[in-house]
Image 1 (cartoon, one colour):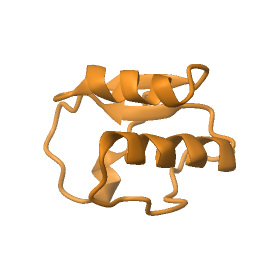
Image 2 (image 1 turned 180 degrees about the vertical axis):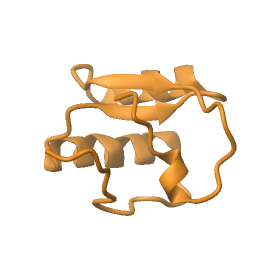
Image 3 (image 1 turned 180 degrees about the horizontal axis):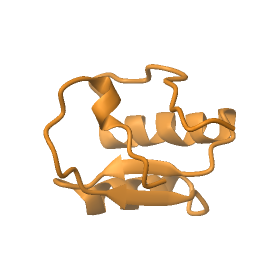
Image 4 (image 1 turned 90 degrees about the vertical axis):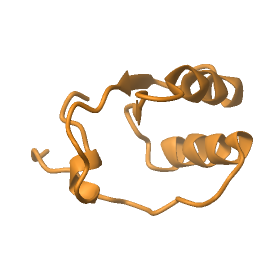
Length: 80
């Protein structure tokens, strides 16, 4: 295992909470992820509770952004 992060899929879109949560849970299982990591600066409780409705056993960690985001690479967190 290396220290790099990779984009496996782009599942973005204009979705209702139940729709994006379903996508996240499906990707979590499809890619056999260890954890879902989501930025919680605004709406973090909603993110976790929506995911838990879809799958209460999902491994989840909320993180807070501390710096500006200039590109997709900055969205990755090494705190996982």
